[in-house]
Length: 360
Image (tube, rainbow, N blue to C red; front, side, top):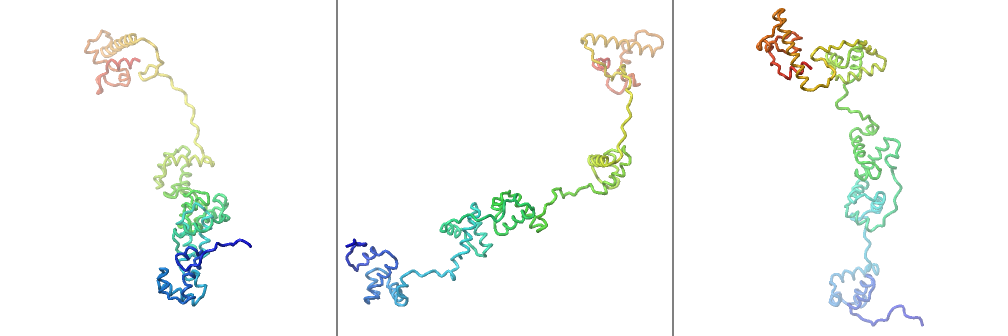
């Protein structure tokens, strides 16, 4: 005789014992209603035995009489009429969005779902869906990386399409493997100029506008008929024509015209070197290494000789030694006497250092 699959227990009608023996909610609901629907017990008596409210027992008994054993099972939720239940397509889209770009946050997924399905979803709902559903395999990329797209318009258009779907700038930059400033630049062009703004544009500054135009180039070319004019004079001549260009810009344009075939400035003729005037006080003589005492002694000898020579010119042929007052009056630097300055000029009277330097 084969062994029993289930343990044998004593028959009982005690509800507390029956609750411990049942294994399914439908079985517990039937044991609760069996004395009422099978033996005719009243709901009040059964409520006193089990502790379940009488109205609940009466309602369940009426449902059992109408639907039979199907009333013991939990009714299926009506998805069509319940706005709180998410459609299957929306739940699958949430899972796919997370699998497409895992760093994307919950609020961004909710914003994309609201844009794509016109269904307002909370980020808490998105978190619950992702926790209950298994993570799908990564879907194939919709767009290659930014630098892998050859056409510059298509590259910027991919940024715009993702942004219009609800992606934020950080996710777009991470998904396309580019920088956020480049994403901002593409969006700025799109909103400012539309599709034509997505083409490559010049990086030259537009504000302020360039001053060098065809009119300025033609004016400089006419002035360059005189090759001797430089940038400063060309700039001054252009100001008279209400064209304001800096001398440096004029020099640059003159060099440009010369490279294109304009006349060049003639080379200056070589000059003969002037004779070296070593006897002038400001002339540069080669340095001589002498002692300080010898230098001062030679300086005072030269000073006395010049005083006598000046006194001889003023007094005639007499070369007598002048008085101290007279010598003080005619004591002037050599540079002042050579240029015709008076002995008592308006400047300060030179001292010993001036005499020494003039002698050197």
